[in-house]
Structures are given as structure tokens and as C-alpha cells.
Length: 464
Image (cartoon, rainbow, N blue to C red; front, side, top):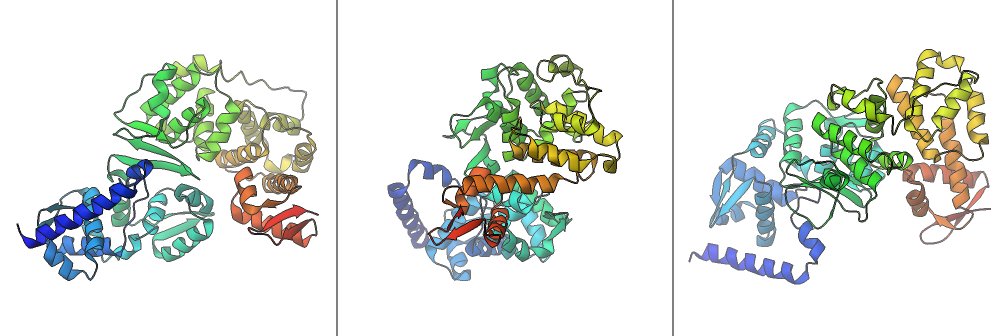
């Protein structure tokens, strides 16, 4: 046996033996490297650059060209095999011919520095294929907002910013590479991540709980597209299963089945819980588009909804009651009542009010007083704020009191929590608010003498 090949097999056996002795069951899944964020290191990049230039070379030649340890090179080759970039055949490493390899070659030919796709930067760029805010990117990737700012600064020449949102610049080769690696990493990929919970689409069976379309048959809706849909969370509620299906929906057929699921199970679904979950999984705009669609109103993302809604309108009355105006109420009273109603289609009446009345003709100061003086809102305050944001996005207006209401409710919520000694992390987890906003408000409350900062580890705060 060739000595070089023998050394490689001995190294492989040694590494595999170590992996088997220390890996826990859940780590076996992570070792697939497809549930984790795609990540290249410096050794991976060197191997990619060499193999794309050489097309094929022996392991010995590869080691001579890369000043890295045998173990590092071994791990890189195994990883790049999983990505479908190369194939090791005994003593020879060969470049494969596929869309991913071609997209990487196009980047290199365009003088793109592949070091930009090492570490977390690749995941950040993939996230930026869609418009994303700082907190959305942080939630997508499970990293801190300060880290997001750092990576965006490093990737500045490839990123454009508009109205607080970021996305990849119009670079055809880079976008093609990012889309390709996002689509063909393997049989498993993460659709969305929120804190420690993530949604996975897979052609193979995994040890997670089924959700979305994979659970539809249990609720009377047959749907099969040869994928399994999973959530890392256990004991899912019906509202979570439904919202997960919205998150996974990519075409009219999927959306039609989401609507059928909602209508068939309308008596079991709490619509306020749907809104809360839709906020977490960044599909609130899609949820209200579905509400508008089932109410016979205009939708913003029409391309994903079935062109003919007659199949669904007849049954939608079971979940969305007829919208009836009370003519004796003022415009402000109508807006207030409909905006805090538990039925989400009531928000469409607020939309009609904003369309039929100039924004400066509405007494927003009076409305603000109505909200803050209401003893008990019919729904959580964060849902109210998100509803106002949805209205702004749908009809392209700015609601003058939205930010003021947000600050009022956030301040009161934090002061309530600080009646007992509380850390920033606890506040963030309970209110699900970006950490930088909590820090800014806490610093202001300390300066005002309302709250004191305690010298604990971690640092905590409480009301004076």
C-alpha cells in the first residue's frame, strides 16, 4: 500500500475513533455541518483556491502547498466533500463540476477575496440576501448586535443600507454564489433561527419535532413535497405549527395549504397567539396579507397567494367576522377600538381610516391618551406596536405616535420588572426587545434617578 495513502487512512481512523468516544447523540447531527451555519476557515479557503487552480492533485502535493497540519487539512477536505466542492479518491483530490464550484470560480475570476467568506461573515452575507435590520440579523444568526455591526463594517463594500435595513449590493457573481451555497449545501438547511429555536427543512429524518407541513395530515390537510419540516422546540402548539408553515411557504401551493389549515382548524387557533408567534418568526407582514386576502382586500405579496380566492372566502367567515362600522363613533374612537381588537381583520378598518382621512386630520394626541389611559388592552402592547408598524408599511404613512407609544410601554414594562433586582439579560428575554434599546433606556432611568445600578455580576438594576 502506498505510504501516503496509508498515513491518510491511519489519520482518518484516529480522528473518527476520537469523535466516537466523545460525541453526544445531539452532536452527531451537528457534525453533519448542515444544520450549523455554513462556515469556512483559512485552511478551507487555501484548499479551495488550490484545487480550483489545479483541478486535481495528490494529497502529498496539497500538503506541500499548504503550511498547515495534517489534521487541519483532513478536516478541510472532509468539510469540502460535504459541500460538494471536491472529492477525495484514495491518494488524489479532485475538483467537482457543479453550480457551487462554478459560482466560486466566477468569484475568483472576478478577483474576489475569498477570505471575506470565512467565519461568520458568510452567514451574515447569506442573511443579507433579504433586507434585514440589525436585530433581525442577530436573531437569524444567534449572535450579538455588536457582532453584527462588526461584520457589517468588515463587509461594507458589499453591503448597502437604506432606512435602517441592510442587504447585499447588486453583484451578480456574489449573489449567485450566496444563493447557490444557501440552496445546495445538502439535504438539510436551517430556514430560520430565533434565539435557541430554529426551523429545519430536510429530506432525511432527524431527531427533532415535526412541524409545519409535516404536521398538516394530523389536522386534516394532506400535503407532501418530499421534505420533512422540523422545529428544535418540543411540544409545539397549533399556532406555532401554523406560523412555521408561513415561514416555510415559498409558492402559491404552499400558501393555499396554509390557508386550508387555518380555516379547517379555526376553532382551535388563538389568533392573538398567532400574531405573537408571527412576530418572533418575522412573518407578521405575511400574516396580515393573509388576513387581507381572506377579507377580500388588497395584499402586498400577491405573487405567493392563489390568484382565485373564492375557494376560501366562503369559509373565512368562521374565523374573521364581518367588518361592521359603528357610525356614531369618532374617527379616533374607531381607530382605537379596531387597533386593539383581538380579531386581526379589524386592523383593516384602521387601514381604511388612514386611507380616507389625511394623516394630520386625525387627533393623534387624543389617540395617544386613549392608549395610555386604557386600564387593560385586549392584547399585549408589543402586538399593538407591531400592528401600527404593519399599517405604516401597508399604506406608506408614518403614524405620529407609534414611537412615543413604544417608549411609554417599554419604560413601564421595564420599571415593572425592576421592582425586583433584574439583569439586562433577564429583561431582554422577558420582553424580547433588542439589548441596545434596553441599555439606552436603563442609562436614561439611572440619570433620572428612577433606577439604581447594582454592582453585581452580572450587573443588575432595580427601582429606587
